[in-house]
Image (cartoon, rainbow, N blue to C red; front, side, top):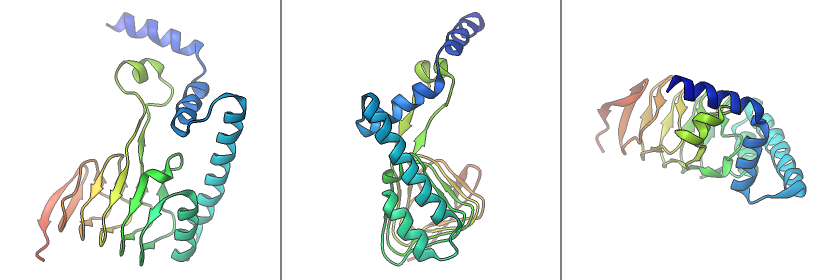
Length: 187
């Protein structure tokens, strides 16, 4: 098994991981050919510029406006603090309900990608793009990480620094790494 892994690793070295990753993103957006590469680069440049403005803006209204322009679905009366990272490649896969607050230094990812190891990508862990849904009234404290495919329940609270890898039920407080329910909120 180790010999097979070493052989595959040598084959990977011959491939350009940038091209592999670029093709995966192009396929997601339905781009192809040289013009498709150009379209993808323009899309990513626009996303980067808008995200950069949103990331460092002290005003939540500007942050929300920039993130909506990137394709993030954001409801009414939300607050997104500075230094929040919303998936750079797949912003349209993030949905945020009404009255949601997200604290500084939180990261929300809508994709899983092993990166440059073609053996792992093809054998066990292919790129996955899975939507993230943050329901209305959720409160995500600073420093949290929300992984791809997670739904945060209505009026739930994510404690500071939690790593959320599974769905959070409605009206719950979760904490830890990985985050787990520590309390139900009476309603």
